[in-house]
Image 1: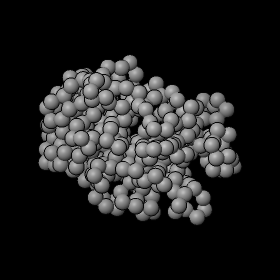
Image 2: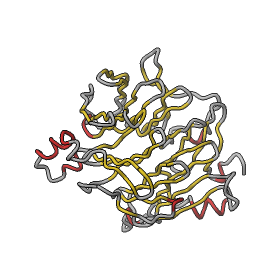
Image 3: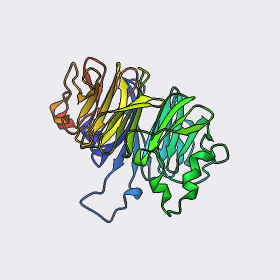
Length: 333
């Protein structure tokens, strides 16, 4: 990456989301930040960029860029060869299908989105008031939490007289093994399972806010919380395996292990023999200047991507590869 390109596209912002497809094809959301300590700038009005890393596919350079304005928090996932961006208002852009922003259909309650993810090839957007939408095709989404089909999901919501119930009830994390085996969770240990036909609530041994869920290829569900608790299980069998004092920010599965990133800027993995988390070790250490600065992680079959606010590296099981680097710190100046 040239210094000029870094200065133009990366220096004014920070990385907030990632979706890798393979070692040479990943997407990032870059959030512009207020400049020169200008507190008058509304963060929702600052530009966001979809930065797609595709060095072997783009003849114009390592990255392709799509810039957005006035879109609030933004998340990215992929459906086949199509990048799908969702903002916090449940508005969607299908980048490679050349759509413009559109409201996600069938959003009966109109609350905020908290994320978008790919489960076994299918894309789901999810958010407050236990809203989940499944992508069916260009501008086509199915609401799989409609009140008419799933009244139990909204029974306690309808009884509540809280004005801001949308801030109290909702899904902030979602993952699954397939379309008939999905887990979703939110505030105060609010946790649900979907079997393709109906949702049911599951009681967890924690009441803290759920921040991340990963359904591992070992058949277990791994849950991280905003007070550091990590819970492992499936169906109705769950155990708390670790208690920390910092937030688990992201989790993913790679090369036979679950990985967590945390608010303390480190990456952890689960040690089954000791039944606890431990700081992850890799065959090749990632650069020293990333230690204690990791903001998030994501994975695909080929790699684990770790990113700080300004850098991203992909681990292929043997070594770390630079994806986004600060020019003066790069190993390939």
